[in-house]
Amino acid sequence: MSKTGPNEPCWCGSGKKYKRCHQSLDLLKDLRGDAGKPSPDGLAPDGRPLVRAGTVSPRRTVPVHIPRPDYAVSGRPPGSRSRQVVKNADQIARMRTACAAARQVLEIAKQAVRPGITTDEIDAITHQAYIDLGGYPSTLNYHGYPKSLCTSVNEVICHGIPDSRALQDGDIVNLDVTIYLDGMHGDLSETVGVGTIDDHSRKLIAITHDCLMRGIGVVKPGGRVCDIGRAIEDHATAEGYGVVKAFVGHGIGEQFHMDPQVPHYFDPGQTAAFIPGMVFTIEPMINLGDWRHVMWDDRWTAVTIDRNRSAQFEHTILVTEKGVEVLTLPRGVEQPFAH
Ligand code: MF3
Ligand code: CO
Ligand code: CO
Image 1: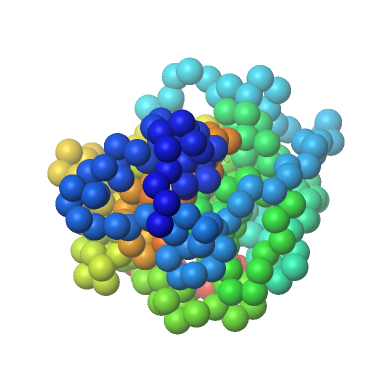
Image 2: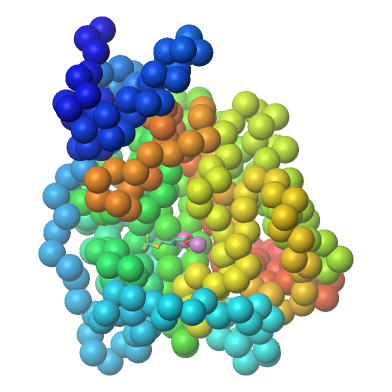
């Protein structure tokens, strides 16, 4: 195996010079005697080609009659994060509307998934679905993000940008949909297989969904935010999986990302108590291998450091007097916990 020179592009595909990217980590690993980096021929540890960035199509427009969040033009949400965590009845009613619509959009996005479709084509279908419901795609121009949903394939952990890459038989893809409707954001995501997926991927997806549901299951008045991370981390690590730490669940409402922050690992510092009327997301990202990530040059796409696959599921939930209500369930599906 040839060694990468310090000024050559890093083996990871980030586009950065090796010395500015993985060189120091590799030196550490050499010292410790473990390899753990993808082969330099562009293959993931499972032997399949790494995901490569395709071409991003021009920005899609939203008709003028659709109400939009404050950052839609500037790309910058207001500097101060709202610290108001408990919502009143009117806000909760509007959260229900936004979350139900987000679910409808996700179902449309999922139906489009098949080998050969590009993630940009899924973006186009999804973009139209938000508009048909009278909503704005919350991700569009959020801190400058260029598209109407996130499509995170295989080793991409989150925030993958839809582009000209066609989904391949055997891929897994997370579709993360957020709508702004009735003055509120509703946010959810699921990971699905493309065509036929291998058993490792199937199990990763199943356990990641279990992690989300276990996290939701501990939410009730009397508990604390750190209970969520403990439940998720216990389950994931029992399977030998890595729990991503850099991206967390979040309060949501009039703003896309609000207090509280909801880590998916156990952080004893997260002592905030659950109070009826709190609305936030839980969205664990679980890796087949190492929990750490690296960023592509686009500054959005986060991939696993070892290029093993990663899965994610997300719901927006409401703390109730008795427990928890999941706001982003499909219509007709029963609430999984006391509410
Ligand atoms: N929907 C993602 C979340 O769950 C956020 C995407 S923000 C973007 O929090 F800018 F990357 F689109
Ligand atoms: Co999301
Ligand atoms: Co979210």
